Image 1 (spheres, one colour):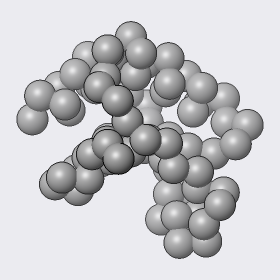
Image 2 (cartoon, helix red, strand yellow):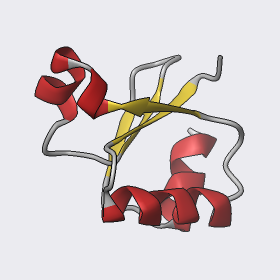
Image 3 (cartoon, one colour):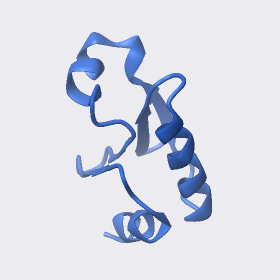
Length: 76
């Protein structure tokens, strides 16, 4: 399991864009968590997806983000 989690939804255009940004940033392996599958995640992230979370320290990067923002987030 990775320390990075990308919270997303099914059929989410912004989530598709976030995946492309993650690839452009050459982000390390990350897990995807589907907000639609969990009432708890739905409550926390429902209107914020996509969100990148670092499980080591709890930091979160909300959309919109670009490759530079992802690289800066990962460098912290």
